[in-house]
Length: 232
Image (cartoon, rainbow, N blue to C red; front, side):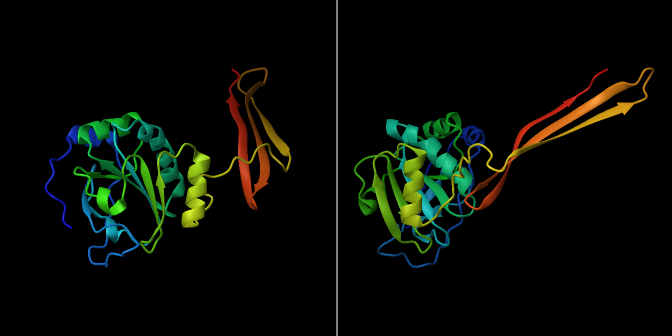
């Protein structure tokens, strides 16, 4: 359904929030009975209105939130980290529910959260998604099928990672702490001497140490320190 006219969010708050533009969606693909409702919601920031049923082509994590919802405030940074780490492997989209757009944008700015969000000013998603309270997160596969609905707060990166892996089959979205180098450490140090006056002065020392590790069969290079010192 087409979005009702909504009052635009204050331009200065939209600019300050620096949200990712809302995605373009398929206006013609048939809505699925097992998918998101056929609702078109206005973008909270910049970008076109979003037809929820037209979100196809890659998995979607749809988080329903509001600035007046205290648990939602705790979740937002987790979804921001997911959006930043996932790249093109999935899409994170927020739905600000029954919220003042200025308050919603201010919260995102203060929380350093920049993924795209849409506005559900009249709680149009409530009946079709059967939510009774916030937050709620809906996991949707690339074909538009809802694979899981998580009711209530997601409290940790580990929990969110597990839900994404289990219900969307997307792995390695947060990276991995590989710990201490496994392949040993080598150090390269070079001293440069130049005839500047008399006697010769040592002009610089460059030292770098690299730790090499292997994590998940992927080579990892860890720069431990890099220092350039001038002695005059």
